Image (tube, rainbow, N blue to C red):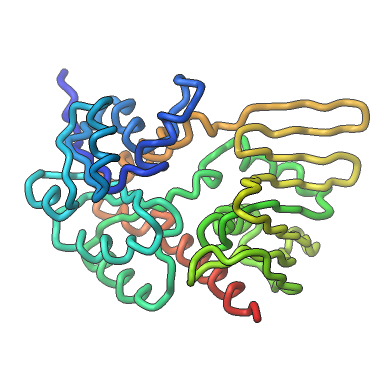
Length: 310
């Protein structure tokens, strides 16, 4: 029986759209939307767009796919079911508004879905009226090996997060995971400035507190300058510790033993996109079951913390 292909497109051929897989040393792993669509059996990557001609020309060396310098021209000239938005954060809002004019069955957006809260309610209302699902790629939230750490939370004392490149841009990844683990935080305090990344985003250090089984769990965010490129989550337990390093491995330190395990990082984008497609195609209620609203809650929290810095 012939499998009906789902037509997919990528807007933006930067790191998440295409380049990460060119940089990867392990060619078995997949990190980008373009390569994920080629991997998934029932998807057909029919077109991509980017306003950078150098990126388009580099893409053409690896894929025989129609390329456009304008995503609007791409959308007008192709029947597209699924669209991935992999452009800079500040461009997402306009693209999401423009996509409302087309019959897209599902949108997959890189984090954060927006970089400000000004038009959030307007965009949410329009997408809910149209019943178009939007998924946001906070990839740690889909990694079962990272999520399963929650089983150890009976003994948790505190958590330390080390990050770089803006609280809204990168730090929101960790806020999303913490919300997945614990729900909404109780409060935050002790905000310190580290570095300005955009006119709307800063790297900050601060403390944020969550509730777990009637216990308050302190989480210390330590921001680093962008040149550091750090990605570490340390969980301090009563008699042990767990470290998630570079999203790629989990290190368990017991009294006299150290165990290292791989996360699902090397194929999580394939798993994530497959899930989005499975739950969206021919499902008119899919828009209610995405992580879109939760991602907006996470964005509002990051923006709120940013706004408290003086």
